Amino acid sequence: MGAGASVGAVGGFAGSRAHLPVAGNGSGGEGGAEPSTGGSFFGGSSGALGGEAGALGGEAGAFGGEGGALGGTGGASGGTGGVTWTPHAPCLAVGVIAPGASTPWPNPNAPPNPYTIDTITMQPWYQDTYAPQTRMWMGSFGNAYFLSDGSSWGSGAGSASYGSMSLDHITHHGALIAYHMTVDSLFVERTDYDSGDHSAHFRLETLGDWTIIGEFGTPSGTLVGQVIVTMDEPANAVDGRFSYLSSPLCAAVPVTINYTLVSGVFDDRLFDNPFDYVAQIVIDLKPH
Image 1 (cartoon, rainbow, N blue to C red):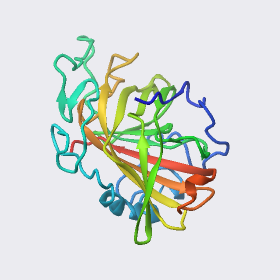
Image 2 (cartoon, rainbow, N blue to C red; image 1 turned 180 degrees about the horizontal axis):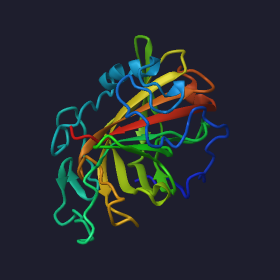
Image 3 (cartoon, helix red, strand yellow; image 1 turned 120 degrees about the horizontal axis):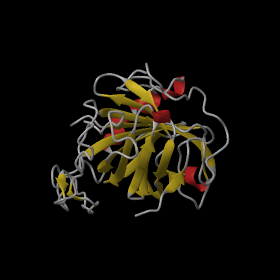
């Protein structure tokens, strides 16, 4: 498992996480529209999922590629889609929790919030920078949490660790170029306090193939991947401020990452040179 980068209080960076503010990025506070296919949710025009990069999403899924979809509950090695299962504690397989691993609500006097987190959006406050011979970040700062009752809250103080990925090989599919990535097990582990008003505490790990699909010669690309929920439990707020994720422990959930290159274009030499980019992430936690 990759160590992942750690970030302390929001606004602190680990490693070199670029230098220029991202236009349109805010806390994503209450009142933001929940992301959906074709929707805009990051505040700026670059956050539109239905734009050129979003249009590639379907084809990205098709090329998602050799791994394809997980083989359903159990995720057996060599099952449908050819995904080889690697155990992620506390999960024996997709949808299968190890005996005794499920954590009950720890405070009998404070029932949990009945509304769960349907969607998480992530976007950096600054552009990220890739340099040759290094790895590319997978996760990013929290942006907003969208709950099952239709409400939302903006990411606030907390801490996080992120995994990273590197290029394995490139394939071509007509006008599209596919970057097949080698990824850490960790996608993101996040503790979010929203300045004490709300709380979330979870860990998501990668599943299957992660492939960035770009339209050759353009700055827009999309990655459609999957993660598994390996931790979802209260941290410091053991009361109604805490919200569980809508998908249960050991569930597989989809992640969409829309990339906009600030320098460079998607071509065969992209990873041979430094480039700046913005990654806008949607984690869809609604039960599937």
